[in-house]
Image (cartoon, rainbow, N blue to C red; front, side, top):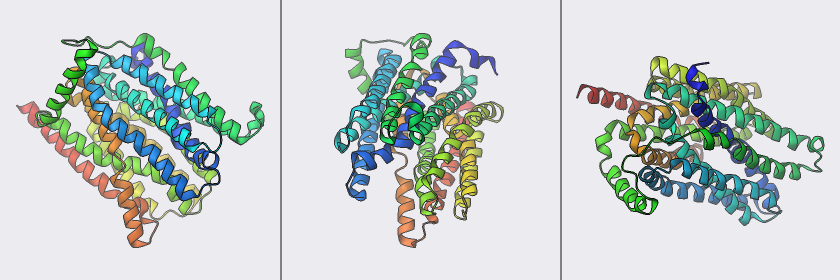
Length: 422
């Protein structure tokens, strides 16, 4: 293991990915969507419950998209990125714990609490992303970012595996029914999240902020700085082009994540197969994210991202011909091999393109772009399926997002070359 990964601040920073990824697996991707329909919307038409779930997700995403760049700018001015992370981590964890207490049929309370957890998860991630510049040098960012994602896959997958056993065999844990197991799973995520956030609180320190201001003054200064950054983003042209490329290809990545289960169900696969495939993706993603960090150091983060996008492209084409469950598992392995790598190298690459004393603000824009992702892809896929009447075109329809995103990434490399020549 590279020595950089054994440094206490690096390990403590990466453990936050281990901590909060439990929310991404058990809550976001795993049990909440199912439990929302079967428990909090019991007896409600499926179309109504789907709309309510979509409204909760969209409301949280919109709030994050609005707040992320502003809070990032304020944190940069006041030197409070770490405080912001802890505040929103606690917000997300407490909201997740509160799901345990929401009774059957109380869908509105569940939706509001879930939205609060989602906002805490996303905004704490924004601050954690921005703090990579506090624990890693430029030439270490690829492997450190990959380390964080690898820890996230391992930690999130480990707790999710335990939670799946709890739900399938509640008697082993002294629980009476599946519903009790799901509610305890939400509580376990909150405990896990708070417990493994402690190392970051103790051992990660922000670098000194130039011209640091009190929080009350930083709000106004942050607003002015954010306006200036958006207005003059062309001065950071590689970062601007990267954000455009990232918006396209990460839209494709998120669309695959969101539509994979729906696509599998449309082909007649069982929900238990889908849960197993999700677990498989998590555990394959652990060593793969580490490997991509190493690969980024050897061939460059941009080439590593392009390699991952090529795999996504080929997998999306293969999905059109998918026939059996074993092929679905094979696709889960392929996605696991590159999903964490594309995300981790994107974070590291972007970290190199921005001014480090404005990392909170610029990572706010990065997360805002991420929140607006998965808008084009599902719409494109749904429209193509609706017009063609062919459900197999659902995943194939997002291929242009990978092609366009990859093409723009070449433009980022060109602009970097010009900057170095200048």
